[in-house]
Length: 212
Image 1 (cartoon, one colour):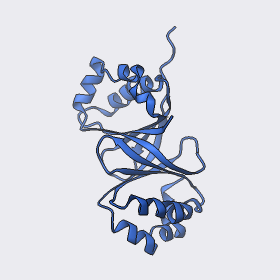
Image 2: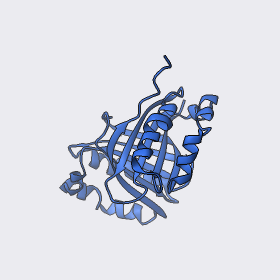
Image 3: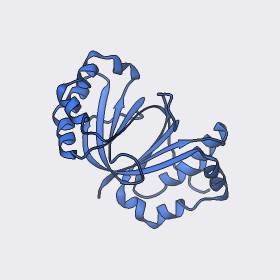
Image 4: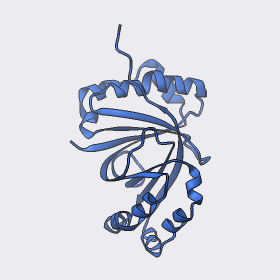
């Protein structure tokens, strides 16, 4: 059993925001939570002013995405097809866990996603494990850092997902230290692609209620 992350970026585009949220919260996401092996799901809104403006992420076992139950929920209803056709962005990625440090928090107020590609994955991993993550986790309010490798979708090959209390932590002196060391400069000089996004908690995905 492999721990995985389903990571979906969306931009409503021509879909009015109330319709977008109603579709996501009453049909799209609840159906996925009903699939065996998909354990939890969360929705976040962009805090960085960038697009896509919405992130949904699901914690799951990789095998859940290959069973009949998941394939069934991927067959779109007429309503879902209408919504998807009007979205500006629906960027679906699947990642497998390669490292998990820190303490999980329920409904983290803020998540920072940093996706990278580099020809020196070993050097990047060593830097994260030996220097960068320990420095970040020493900051009060910086709770957890998980690292993943992309196995489906497009975008940079590696993802770090940070769970933190508040964007104000970016102004903490220890954060500035963690992001300005000589070793970081060496590692980042070899990075060929980078996406950094900041999102704030919107809601927790709930499964469909059982039929009466």
